[in-house]
Length: 222
Image (cartoon, rainbow, N blue to C red; front, top):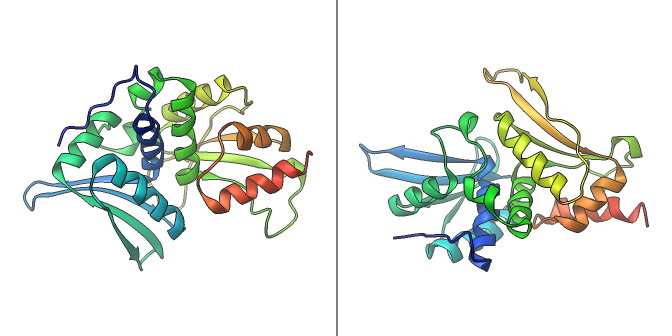
């Protein structure tokens, strides 16, 4: 199966592709040639978001993903088993064998703001964090969005794209070391109710829980 994207043409498929690749920041590529396993996999606690992402993947690849509950970590997994799809996603994503070396896909960096916005949204929905303001009162000084990755450069590139949309960010911080993990992680934050509200208006989310939190934060400055 051929999966070609024209960076000159602003198409719905291009935007969906950008969103899917953003979501892959919390995904994995699995290859076992001996057993003929070629797999694209994404994890999430929120089943509804995984189901929505499965719909996007089906539109892109004409193949319905499998959704299963990983009982070990109590998360939902979207799984696509296909050599042709695996190779297509590897190609368009510029994936470099592991997450630590995976920078922003080249076609995303060359695309319009509209396409980059979908990539940012997918990144946020899979790997972004926002305070649980629906459960408790959060002080204005603690209102923030954060993105976490083991690749510092991809966060620097994300920061550049977000700032082009007129949203202020902090600098990429780190390295931080999590207990039980050998490799460090890095973090990019958007601070303050006003800037988070801008993110909600300009970028938004397809993740129902995160969209609800962004909406609550935005109402605080109205």
